Length: 300
Length: 258
Image (tube, rainbow over all chains, first blue to last red; front, side):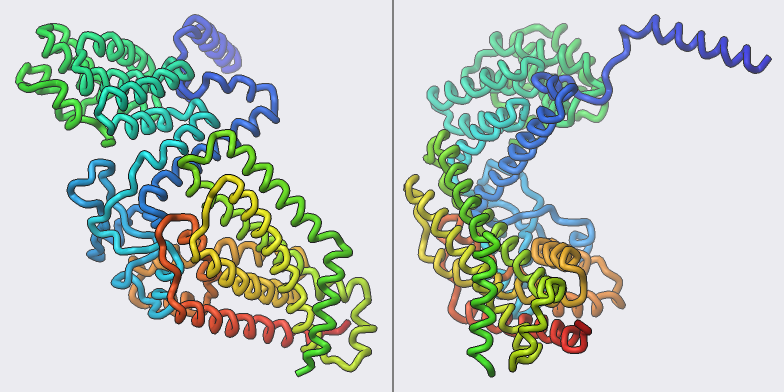
């Protein structure tokens, strides 16, 4: 009797699964990372090569931070260090590149108990006091972004951060270069919410072209919302920005119904968001081109 | 001191290394470096100078350390295994002389490998107009001291372990030195008060191989050469730890049945 019940349950479950098979969503690989890597399914060599290029591009990514600090290794401050009263060694107030919560890897004298060995450690390494530090010109790191996106075209952060560096030059030429890089990235990653949103961001902040940005943001929103459960972290941050800017664009083009529709969907996707409730209530005054900079999730 | 005996033993190690074609491996690695530099030239060197210098000093440090460890870790065990130790010990030299002479030989091999690689890398970089600052000379000097310390460690470990285990432990200690030191210092902040003295003692005893690597200053721009007292301190540091390691090797080897 038990065997019959078990068999019926299994068959019933299999039937229900087969009926819903079309609705099953992939939960392992976010859609953006899959494109272009199909060869790894059948070829060990292709898999190894893919891992190699991904590792190299990640290594280059880490090194861009190092070069911006002229070789001084920084690391995040730990909870124990915070509790011990150690202060972060952040950038100068006028620095717009990073919101760093970090300290130097080679400890400063006040954190070092090694005496003369500590002094020698600081003397032989690229170390200097980093409280209120400045950065090297980010333009120096552009060739690295070019190299990492060439090695791993699916590395979204390489495209978007490289474009951010180019777009720091707010002239039309700087914007055009950033747009060119992003469109190249979009051609390699047509499903990337981050790249679409970054292009729209430049349309809004550099060209004040809200009508040009809206279709891009709508496309990004649709892509992101349809993969909300499986989306990668950086894409998720970008999607949150997408909702902000899309709602703002609708507000500034006098489309209040669309503004509320987008804000309501955004709140459903990001319940902790602080901006979207204001947009839903229609109480967010201002200029979307200026607000886009201040509302950016994750920082530049 | 039997300087003549040490010199003869060291010369034997260098000749053995040439005979075993170890230095050919270095030449091939150097050729690969040149090829890799040529590949990077594909992207244009404008803006990539720092990256290329960083990569070069990393590769230099890594390959020369590998050569140093693999040469030093197999010397004593090979002499015992191939029974070539007997004719050596039949001569008027002590086991202490043997350890010192062999270690000097492995240091020379690692220095030759390092300087050959450095020269090839330098040529490759000069073709792309990548310039090094005067601190490069200090980098070479300090790295050579670091290689001497590395060889001493590998000799000591090979006296207590099999060649493979000795080499593996040497790799872990040399390449992991920076990580172990930094992790220990991070752990110190949150450690229980009774544990803090233990961590301090460990940090004081543990040799910091990373002190001999000025690669970070060489690769990046506008770092001044290190003060002379630092170089002198590093020499003393190398001398103290190398002597300690070789002393440990001798303690084991002097009573070892061959």
